[in-house]
Every structure is written in structure tokens, then in C-alpha cells.
Length: 105
Image 1: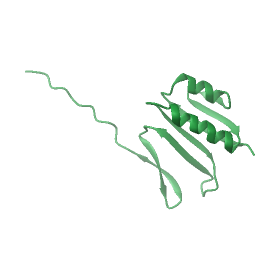
Image 2: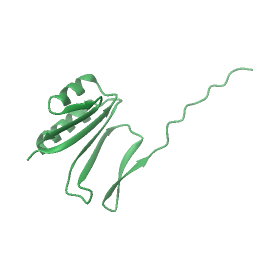
Image 3: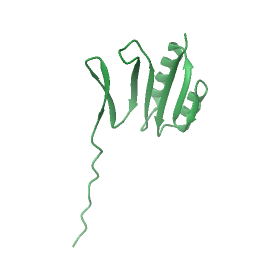
Image 4: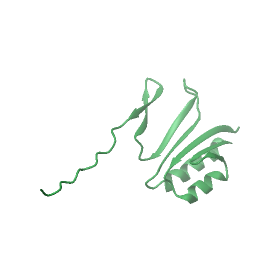
């Protein structure tokens, strides 16, 4: 039975966006929404994880949890889902530090 999925992408290759748009609608740049079977969802996610590269992606889909959904991530993100007594919460990591260059006096 098909169910709604949301896939959000950041800085992924354009061919991945094209592949996702075959099964979902890109409602705003990088946000894909669709109604697909669990098999198609898992295959799409497998493809995303294989080609995400330096970008990032997140998948939200219905699941038999207290919240009613599950979250999967791929790539490097500042926000990471964490299980807290059965609830999925989002942990923010610190922004990467940029080294300051010293100028000669």
C-alpha cells in the first residue's frame, strides 16, 4: 500500500534530483514529496545513499512508532536524529570552526 514520503536534499548531484522526480514531485528546490510503496521508498533511499556525495539528504516516512513516522539521514548534517526513549529527537552539532589566518605585522 502506498504511503506518503518526504525527501529533503542539500547539495546533491543533479542526476539524483532527476531520479527522485520520476517517483515524487519536487515541491520546492530540494524537497520531494510522493506516495510510493515501501519497496519503492527503500530502493529510492538506497540510490540516494549511494550518490549523495558531499551533500546531505533526509527521508521522513510513516512508521509504527509513537510519533507515527521514521527519519533516515545520509551525508553530513548538523542535525542528527537521536532515539530518546522511543521518541526521535533532533540533536544539533556545533558548526565547523573556521581557522583564522594570522597576518604578519
